[in-house]
Length: 288
Length: 313
Image (cartoon, each protein chain N blue to C red):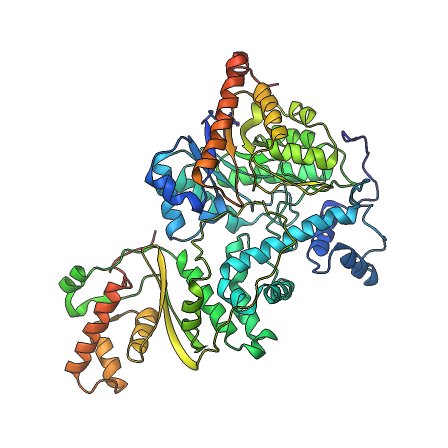
């Protein structure tokens, strides 16, 4: 497999959700691309798959998974990987991503993005599995930093250092979720700017932006609100550091009308364009 | 050393053991602390708290932090099953459904990478659940709801048109599309399903499967819907997808055996006439042929017959 190269910036995207299927197919939109939850389309047939292929005719599509379970100590699920490979072959996505997490153990599946201890043992484990997944899929993948609500006593590395090391040694990309960095920084009291600055520039393929909820003692990554102001501020720093990287607004619960989502996406585009225009050198910077 | 200045604890379990303990504790329906007490009582662990594995702080103890994941685990799966079985949930009400799912997940935790399959054992589980004593039709209602989900994303197929059937003549080989199935249920739940349909929104399966949940656990449960007990009557129900819409209808006595054999084996039209005459449902060949022609017309109209030679991709 050829070494990972940072994909081209494909602009501003949003998640393709069933609430907006009809709108997206009926008229043109201002978004440049769509992200889909891979598992929703890893089915035999029916409407969602048909809609995905129709959308794909008009837009680039990124496949974003939630079930890879790259950090689990269970064996890799070969059935899952084969279905994922088949879908990717059919959709020809701009890239495929999933999360730095595990979703189950002992054959059970929690269907949640469960946190990893950031230990040397876990690091070697994840690197080995990313390497095997990429071989199986015949393509590089990008891993997303999750929001988390606990840290492990076994951790010897920060999350950003762990993620950077996985990307470097497994030769994969990073999907940098700016909201998740912010949520975890509040939950675990770390500096979110220092987190971004620890991520190598050439590994970041995509940004995520999303809303979260304040539960008092912690923030919860709910994807059911507009992007919060501190996350927009962190996004400014991210664009300043990483340049014009493809950006996606996630909104998965209490999904608003299409116009509201589109406006949120446009806000990200304007902010990004403004920062890139003010710092033209960031577009051409190489690896950190 | 991590950025927060805390070094790793040497007595932390390895990755495998960490994940096993994590799973055992978030899957306990009574919460992390109760789960921890059970593990201690069974001798699986001797620690009084989780500080050997999870860091706490002045805001949240390690057990409170893990409880966030325990809540998300249960509510995400419960909400997914509520989307899959909205009519069962409506009949028994939100509180009973909540408790039912607690029981179900203990017996049938998810073992598939897709949430889509979580409800596969639900109807069978419900048939043996206490709730079925007072409402013995619940399992059949669940079977109908699950069959509709199964047909929603079953394989696509090219459907035979009336014109193509006419050209093919009597030797036309009849086989049903993959997105068609026949349920044999003991209680005629179709009227309940119809009655509740305007109160629950259909699932079109293209929604979010994301990691996000709202975390809103302070909810008011819906009261049970007022429904009449259905008739106890063995009822064959056809469930199928036409285009992208899923339908079901009760089969008439004369149609059921014919469609079952088409579904199972595939047949040519004269075979169906023999079935009707053999079952003494029709007195002679002419009457049987007329009946078969009528049935075929309906099946073609419903988009049930696959085009001969079609191979699913």
